[in-house]
Image (cartoon, rainbow, N blue to C red; front, side, top):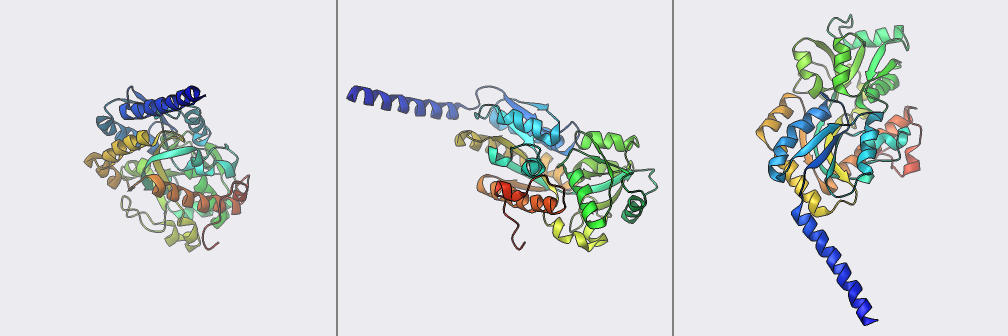
Length: 337
């Protein structure tokens, strides 16, 4: 019996030791990176800017591939189905925090660990450059005169362009005809081709097109101006009814791994991507594109995501756009509600 007992103890010790060695040697081969949104969009651009810099610290390559569809749920499922070993990274935005309420997927960020939340940004409402809509007021008047007929580009249910359209519905009483695309890049292409009347885009994805005169900005979905587009009015200046909603507004981008990934592996990835975020090239990009570099990790990142989920889930549900009550998933109401 003692021999058997000691054998079991030695086996356990050996497994622990192997795990430690494996984490210490990580990464031993190239890493796969799954980008949840299409080429040219905000998530894609930020991910591809950070990763070559992070590779210098990791000492290996991160092979990036876009895996789009279902508001990023296809990418999330792919990473959730992979091994929790740090060799499959997910580059995503805020969307998984709304999957359950919207009935898109049983997944949420509870099923993943944040490596780092890199940036937070805001959405800008834009129209094609030749649009007859010269202002936000023009947009609202036209939408009310043509209920359900004006086309709004969205990146799927739960994406920021869709959330923006739902906020306009709630606070302005307007309805649009939603047309789905795989992220900001395809949305921009559609707007440039005059295939859409209006859309909400990440400021970082749209700013150069706005400055070049290829798109016209009508409003920033924020409680204050965005430094990258100082001449574009913020939504609460145009309609104060949006004030409370804008406290939970905007999006965030981050790098994630499957829950259960060894902490030493997460720590190595965090070190590499925080190094990338502090690079001058990345900081300059963020400033030029109106993005706030937040660099949240661990508990701070988790608390930030859960607060965002609480605020936005209840906002969407109260607006009548959710399929499930946040209560069903134990999502608390925001403080003061």
